[in-house]
Structure formats: structure tokens, C-alpha cells
Length: 254
Image (cartoon, rainbow, N blue to C red):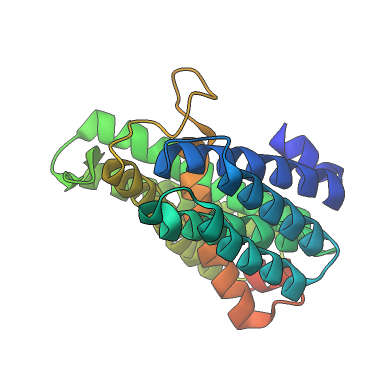
């Protein structure tokens, strides 16, 4: 479904990201405040949806302004003083990757390719890390944060995306394949960091899963934690190389 909506056009993709952002706002409230449908949730959800729409219209400043205002409002509407900072951080942490994905898709020439490249990196990193870690095992990567993750899983989660990124470059053409392979490795590392970050947040709030949206697999946050880290890293690269054409900035090397 994600692939179909990505290919269908900018606005179907934007609607998908906005809907996912609303679900993530619900899960974030459940995670950090213990309440899913409170005032902070409605503020968080409205801010991220508005930011996605602004991003789809091509206005980066309005999108960031919506997130900034939403973060402040979420802090003020959070019921407990101890959760105000986390409520505000949630708007930024979950909102910025959302608008970055919309901006990547908005690139007329390379938007579809850029999104599918990010999907390829994240999905292959998650799959390879899981199966490599289960098969080889070995020393734990971060036992305090995520006891199930191993160094062998990290290596596998970097190796496969690197190889697939090289193949993607050959398929795409017009870019330097070794450069895109190195980018794939870097984004795969960002994916693993995103995964560990979510694990650390859940451990802080003594929660096993972010939600029960996907029976047996936890919540949506549990499924997209790696994409959050990857999108943030990809966005930094695009900004550094020329954000007006973010897809080209991400894929075309040197």
C-alpha cells in the first residue's frame, strides 16, 4: 500500500504521511502521558497534519512554523508538568521526518525514486539485522536499551542496504554507484540509531510496545522508528547539498 500511494502522486503520499502522523501522535500521548486522547494529542495531531499539508504545498517555513507552534501548544496543554517537555519533543521528533518525506516526494524528477530508495534502505536494514542477529547471535549491542540487539545484527543491517544501494544506483543511472552505496550504509546506520532511540524512550516510560495497532507487532511507532532516523539523516544531506531538489540531492553523486 505504501508503494502504491507513493507512486500515485504527491498528494496521495502526503495524505498517507499525514494519517500516519496522526496515529503516531496518538501513540506518543499513550507512551509519554499515559493518555491517548487528551488535549495535547489533538494539538500534536493537528500540528503535524497541518505541517504535512504545508510541505505538500512547497512551503518549508510554514511547515516548520506549524511544528514549532504545535510543540509549544502541546507543552501547555499537557496535563502533567513532568510530561510537558516530552509532549513538545514528540511534535518535533515525529513531525520533522514526516515533512521531510513529503519534501522528498515533491521533487518532480526524483521524488518517487528517493522515497523508494529510503524504503529500500530501511526495510532491508530491519530485515537483515533481525535475521543476522537471530542466526549468528553474539555480543549484545546495547543490552541496557535493547537486550535483543547484537553486533552481528548491526553488521548485517549495514551490509545488505549497502549492496542494495549499489544495485539501486546501477538501476537508476546517472549517479556514482560507490557513493550511493556509502550513503546506503550511512542511512542504514541512522535507521539502527532510530530503532535504538525508540527503545530508549519506551524503556524510560516502562512500556513494551508503543501501541496495539498491529497485533503481535506493537504500534506504528514500533514499525517506523528506523524510518524516522533515516529520514532525519537524509534530510540533513539534502539540505547540505541543495534542498530545492531534495530527491536529486539525495541520489545524484558526486
